[in-house]
Length: 140
Image (cartoon, rainbow, N blue to C red; front, side):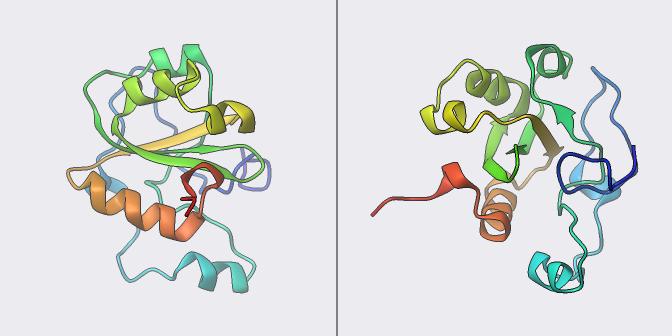
């Protein structure tokens, strides 16, 4: 699948194998001095600051194929970013698929990406700041 065919902004590269551990953030990260999303968009380039990977369909089979107990960050996407979260990736994605967040259920995400990291709090904040996902917006 080329980047042009990808249903969410993505890099073409590693496609995680179902059931294989997700990539560690340090394994395939783009250098920290990479341009911001805003800078990339101004040049007509749209990419994810997640570990390089193909987005996976947001469905039970894809989520259950993930290894459990992998802590990190994940993003849900439809026609725009729906939600960015952190935690046990498999468990949190299953919770969302089962309707734990009404906003996510209404937005009906079609794909997800994830990365294992030891600093999920910081990464989640960075991703929310860059993407402003619909269901992460605070009211008040």
